[in-house]
Every structure is written in structure tokens, then in C-alpha cells.
Length: 476
Image 1 (cartoon, one colour):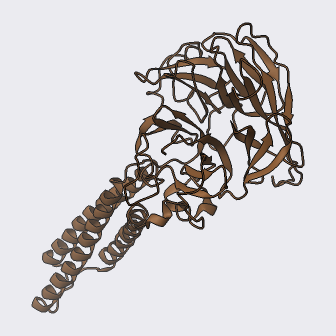
Image 2: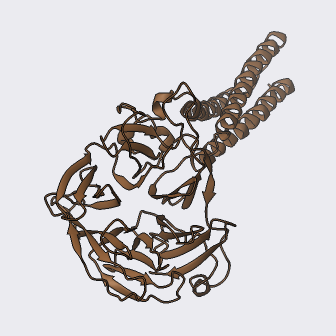
């Protein structure tokens, strides 16, 4: 018996509505993907609304299909009404996809809006805003899914947090990990009223900018997290040849900006210098107008394609004579440029696996001292890449000459040995002590500045592998 035209019309109507539901579900999925690489919380509600609309359309269309089919059967009792198999299976499949997208959207929404305030601080750490000063900012290795890990520091900490240098107590969050999504924070810098943090994640590759400290409310002791203002990132890819892109003074490209690591402020206080781990570049940024330039291509770039590949550069420092110093870990040396925008290096100082750099003026050298964290002996690895031997790290002190710099620099003091320091990272000087982050033990260690004697751990327990440390300004 011929298929009833009303049945065919009913099936075509169902398929049309299911196509619309599938389109809405696909849109929700794409919005959810975009949200993972964006710091905009507004994408969460958009994805959720699209998913709910899609599931309502799919469900209502299936119900209406069965209602009409029942009425057609009642009206034409002996007629053949076609095959339900195709519309039913298609509807079930599309409904499953839409339900899956909705669940993902609800999960993302919950991450953004339903975490309690205790997740802004570090879960498992007692927040003590009244801990004795001075306080320090600490950045950590981070997480590829920072919003998912916010309540689980064992999965990686992407926010910046404050600790007491005097007591080692946890003070509280300096940034809000939900509103400022950073995946791989590296070195940080206090520049005037602002806090700058390098983000080395391949999809982010930028410098995050946070606003000034807001005094606590009269009935509160804790200082609220700094407001996230935006990021400094490379402009769109230039279309010129690679040789032109790597030339001195060339515009900054995403390749040159790949995996920013070190941050340093020039002596004028208005020029930010950035070293990029995989870009192999030293980049200058005007904090007055935001203009960027590739100052030096210190090492060949190592693009992050397919898998994580460690690039050559690490820390950067600029002294009072406007000489720039850049750690080249792969070449086992520190490159020196005097002045900072010199087209060619003024010299090199050989150092095994240099990591962090810092210029300090609290040591008995009028022109200041360049501190270099070095991994003199890397950890031994077995076949699957696991550590089977201890690393040995030191911090080397090099006196600087502001009037007539001579390279290579000469070591005046060595801090740390295999018993006290394994993998140095960020460091600072305060109160006659040198403080050094050790990534292996996840501690902040202290050394007497004059005698180089190890004094002990100032902070004994950190929640994640630490990257950098900086003093918190008064009132923050």
C-alpha cells in the first residue's frame, strides 16, 4: 500500500526540527571549545543557553512526531505508515549529542559561577591575612585546565598567591584564577601600581596585567585580589620573510612571543623587557603606549608544534647602566647586551643551565650584583623520563661595573650545594638574606647574603612547583 503523504510530511517535519537542534548543539560545542582558550566568563552562559534550546527543540519535535503519528493511525487504520526506524534513530542520536553538549556546558558554567569563595584561596591552606610582613607573591607552574583545577591545587595552581616571608604562612590570593585565566604563569614583576605575569601557555603566550591593590573594607583584614586588566600579546602574524621577522628592531610576531618567561623593568621604569623561552627573543614593550619591538633574537626560535618542546631562553634582567642580561639555558651561558637595545651581544658569561636572573643592590657592590640561578647537575632520568638522580643547583653572584662593563663576568659568591638546593627558580633579597625558590622541594630557601650559609626554609610547603617570587608592596 502506498505510503500516506501525511506520514511523509510528518517525518520531514521531524527531520527539519532535528536538523535545527543539531545545529544549535554544534554551536554550543564550538562556544565551549572557544571558552577553554578564553578568559571571558560570558561564553559560559551562551554555551549553556544554546544547549538547553537545542535539547528542548529535539525533545518537543519527537513528542509532536509521535502525537501526529498516533492521530494518523487512528484516522487511517489499515494504511501503511512508513518506517519509524530512521526518524527514531536519528532523533535518539541527535538527542544524545545535545545532552552531552548540555552536560559539558553545565559543567563549565558551574566552574565559573558556583565555586565557593574558598576556592579563590588555596584549598587546604589556612588563609592568614594578618600574617607578619613582609609578604611575597609566588607564581606556580600552572595547569592546562585552570578553571577545573581551581579547587584542586594538586592539579596545578595558575593563580598568584601571597605568603609571609617572616612566618611562612599563607596570606591569601593575589589574583582571581576564575576571572584571569592563566595556564602557565612564569616570572612576575611589580611595575608601579601594576602586577605583570608572563603566561607561557602555547595558546596564551602573553603578559597578563593586573591593576593596583584595593585597600580592604573597614570590617575586613584581607586585601581583595588585584583586578585583571588584560594582556600584552604579539599582534597578528607579519607576512614578510622569516629573515626579516628575526631582524633587530623588527615587529614582534607570535613566533617571537612564543612562551614568554622572564620579565624585567628598564632603569627608566617605563620599558618592559620580556624573554621568550621558545621564541628565543628579547622583546621590549613601552608601558606608556604599548608599542613592542624585537630587541634581540638571542637564540633560534623553537616553535611549539604538536608537543611541548623546551626552548632555549629563561630569565632576563636589566641593570642600572641599562645593560640587559639573558639566560640561554641550551647554550650554557648568559648573554649580555650593553645598552639593552644593542644589535649584537657585548659578551657572554658561561654558566651551566642558567635559569632565573636578578639584579640586586643589597650586596656590597656599588654597581649592583647579577644573581644567576644555575642547575649545575641535572637530574638523571630513566627510560620513561622519571627522575632517578638528584639535581644540584647553585646561585652565582657576579659583581657589575656600571662605568666600564667587562665580560665575561667573574663569580664573587656561590649560594647552595647539593644538600640544600636542587633546581633554583625565582629569587629575591630582603633583610640581609637571599631567598631562592627550589622547584624540586617546592620550598622557599634562605641563605645569609654575606656568608652564603644556608639558613633553612622560609616557606616549607608550597602547593605546586614554584616559578617566581617578588616582594608585595606595602598596603597590598
